[in-house]
Image (cartoon, rainbow, N blue to C red; front, top):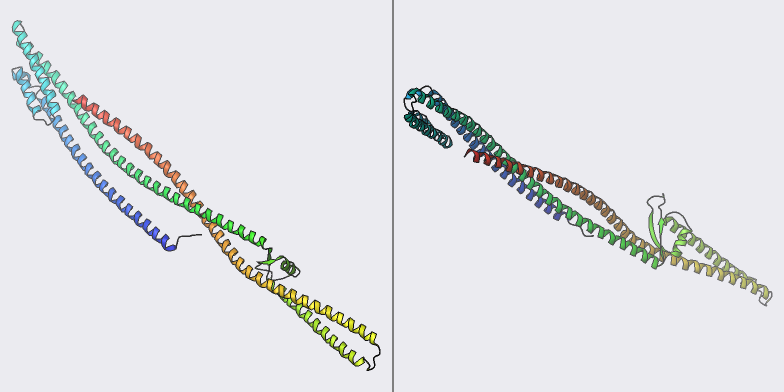
Length: 416
């Protein structure tokens, strides 16, 4: 089957390593930039918090100044004068909302004092009662001012805490989004690896089917040509290998035991014995012929006896000659078949060994790919579970963020 070369695999690994290193470098730069931005935001929040604390201290000082003017307000002599003394420090305050509230309260106090003065001109109310009424109204304004100051300071603290919490939630959200993006990239890479593994597995399955088809074709060709695969052992009985021979040669090889060399030695020994027998028969024939010539008289004699002996000798000679020819022919056929069988055995042995090696390699690679496929599927399932968990966390954080922003907007509207 086709396989990728080592150079191509190394080039792909180097390219993937380079891409991974570049991605890690970009990710580290993004994290560093976000850390710097987070540090800048934290410093800005601390500065705003200190400014709000300064404003709260100023508001508290303003409250103390109003409290110190409490005893001096009745001695001011007029209804509009104390109101003017209270409003002056409030206008110097940096909080516009507090100044507007104080100004509105003092305006109400002035209008009420004007009404009281107008009503006192028509009735017989004394000056002490008028001052007492104005002092009570001024005390109510101061109480309202104190409660508003306390509530405003509490709202400022709550707003600062909420702003700090929002910034922390933003940082957490950025981290979660970054982690989510990283997990998505890893998930896509794992999906790509899984698809590549699946394609490699399909290729290996196709190669296995091709090798199996070749083996079936080999078996059919062997059966078509009337050949048989026999197992031949070595002299020590180890490292048995198979040979491809015809049916006749298989029967002939089955008549002997041992390795192929041992069987060939037995056949050669039998051939030598047959040749020795043939030579002995030929020598006997020569002796019989020579004895027959010497024993024949010149004028005839036992012609019948000599003819019978000669016929018997010729018959025996022909019989031994036929046996020798058949043995030599069988030996030649056996040697030719053995040579063809050895060549076929060598060729088919190399093909079978290559097929077995390829099949073993394909099996090993298939097991490896199946193991990698299972690991990739498990990793993909883990990434999908983590992805769903991060999505849930992200939705919860967004919900809490929206609720927090709505509550802050509601408080801001109430303050305004």
